[in-house]
Image (cartoon, rainbow, N blue to C red; front, top):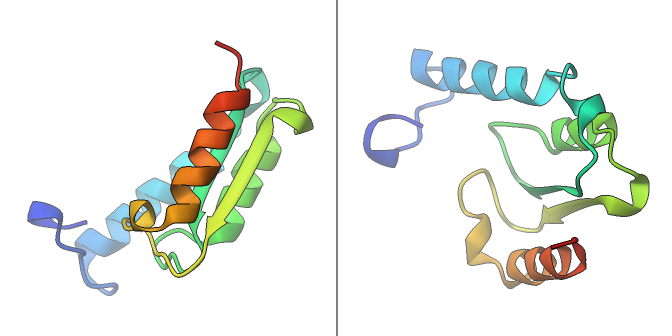
Length: 101
């Protein structure tokens, strides 16, 4: 993202830095194996900043039991517009409802 929430062009320095930073966060496996809390990923199926496969990999690396993991690929959505889709809210509510208090 560029200034004021405007998406940086894909070839720009800001866009490249944002993608590199996001990938580094998702690729960091040093903490994932210590996580024991429920772990969820909500990702736009059309995300061009971070590939949906990277969310899948990050979730797989989490030390959380498989039953406590959730991956939701939100159809028709990209990187910053997930909340405009009803399926996002339904999946989030379901995840929160089944998570321990």
